[in-house]
Length: 465
Image (cartoon, helix red, strand yellow):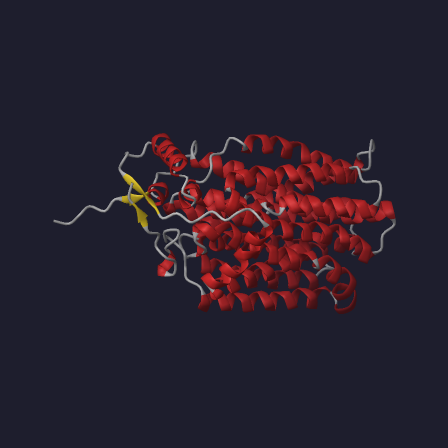
């Protein structure tokens, strides 16, 4: 007689029904942190012309507004991704926003440009952890049947945050009590402090607790999830644990070679996609207001066109969420990425025709938001649990480092000397090459169980208790 197979705790969590009052709460709280990431990155583009006026900055000097912040985010992404795989998702989940909030307030009070850049760097250190930590936590609470849609839908918070930034920044242009760029930063940070407090109520990831051998806590969380979702209770057992590394710089740095040892193909694809997609996106986002002002648009019009680009992205995310579980992650990324690059090249070519330029920047805003959420979903699924946050974090760091130098390279070298069309075309070609490498090197993750993607990941051993 065949012996009935007992499920593991991981399988129980991934086979639960989706309930908005349970997993949906984690999705919303995690997504709101992602929203502040978008708000802050987008704000760099609005800060550049305003801070330049106040301190009389050259184009190259003004580039440090975005560079300091994005380099901080790059370091924060791998630092917090690694920390989350050591100290847990929940602790990192809260601390990232706290660090960001404190240094954003200090940045708003800066009396000098160099000090402002230091505080923007430090704020980036905190906020850089939001994406890898939030995606790891939300993904590990989400049932496998809807994980693609849920993780892709997480990116809807990005255009929401970017659009809110545009609307608030535009509204504050006429603010006269204090410098309007300082007001922009203070208005953003107030709800971030509130969200930090709310995040403390989110439970730790049960998959993380199991891997760390914290079985009593894991059982409490999983049994609570079963009860609250209305799933039928059943017996289950624990999968294997991994020895928890000690918290140190060495333990975090050790994760980098582990990622390449796990799969050089997967890691190279993740890094290539993150780098090229965000070189294009951040380059356009950070410099679009300045490009439009240079073209003769007033600050108000330039801010509103940038807000349009981010606003239509909401529709793009929703469409992407529908497509990833129908055609698969790889198809969405592989087709939409190069199209987004091409649309930005056309925008640069028709920049002297305002109506056509607005249409093409809107098309870019829609198509690039097909790519980004599918990319976030894909990368967060390719790595096993004990490397998930750090794998995403290192890939995010690569994109932030590349994007961090975009303001300097873009503003000092490329735009002034080769023009916008060739600048955007070069990045679009690199993005296309990365998509081709993905097509051959990595598996599709649609409808696959985490930690067993298409047979490339090792199935966890069971521990009978």
